[in-house]
Image (cartoon, rainbow, N blue to C red):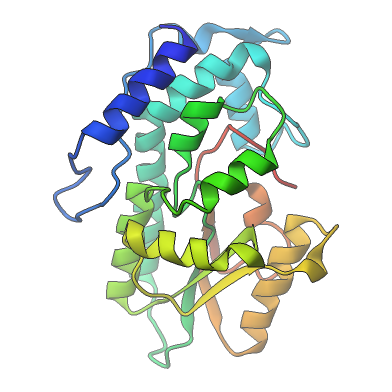
Length: 262
């Protein structure tokens, strides 16, 4: 199946289907599954299979890359729209919940969990299915237009984790690289996707212009700790969500081979 046909099939299924990922939680704007094509992982890049390239990306051994290798765009698309991405996401969020459940809360309302937003709580797969899976340079203008529509669905596994953590008594903080002028659209999108409540929604202020995501997110987590909060867990799709200072008692990395943020 060609990439263009894959994109078209995904969009048709995305907007037509209404099934739920789990009987345990009702998830609006579902991410629907496509079966990846056999042999997609066999494409080669610089002597490695695209599967090996993805492994290097997810383990943070391949860093600083600007685009998905052109020969791997089809593989990345099949992975993101197929079963394995969802299974990998579930493995991460299930382990996060097992850890959170084992933690004894202090009971003072100061225990919290940090979530990233893009490709963590919200999925931009409808956008990437239309514009490609990372082989072309990132288009900030088009992506920002998509953000302002507030139509990104929840990543179902993250939404289920979010609801479970709230049930345990943890406070939720979102820290995103989205700019402050996207606060209204982001707030609207989170609520539409099923994230009904949170302690803080932190967006990137202009004062962080030119700073790395690691610096920005470390600084914002430090403010939480200084205010007396304890970061029990921290989940994101980029290593820059999880590195730096005040990262929390444990961090959890969701898969994302579509882009790299330092």
